Length: 106
Image 1 (cartoon, rainbow, N blue to C red):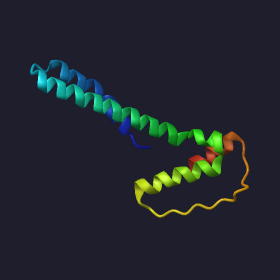
Image 2: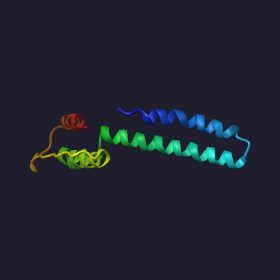
Image 3: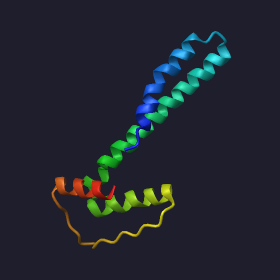
Image 4: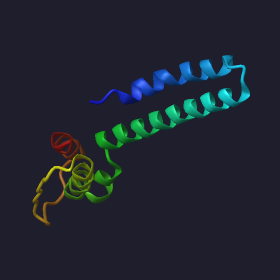
């Protein structure tokens, strides 16, 4: 798994510490803005990791829809060609089985 959330999270306190020591108000504001941007990236990465581990759509729409939506996003990001076929009447499995199958695909 990508460790960028950890890297961003670790950099946030350092960035704020650097901003705190800056004397020039313009440079201080720029450093504070940069620190906030790191924090926002960290939050976004955590959200992405959390979603990819257990997407809410898995509960709401089932395995077939969750995999389809995950792959659509993956295809956009990776520009890979992927085809996914599943029966429309696939039905539901236990939550543990659906989670495990989703993680296999991911």
